[in-house]
Image 1 (cartoon, rainbow, N blue to C red):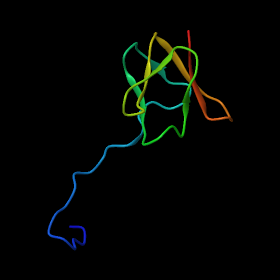
Image 2: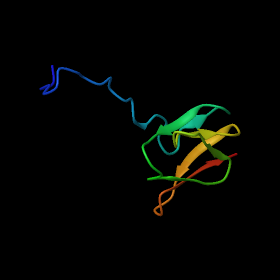
Image 3: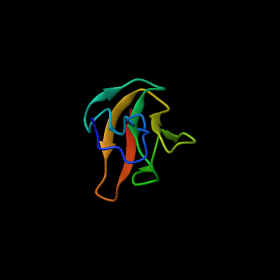
Length: 73
């Protein structure tokens, strides 16, 4: 249990990469959950209201050195 000062504890946020580079993904699947736009949406990738990146088409996930996420058909 985490150290709690005020008697409350927040739920854990399931953040991070869900599908890594080179893996095959289906349209609508989540690529990564993040707080803020650490990674930007590239080709065939959409952004949710909580900065979640998801695939718009089927294909392979590609991460670029400039922190842009693409889905290649």
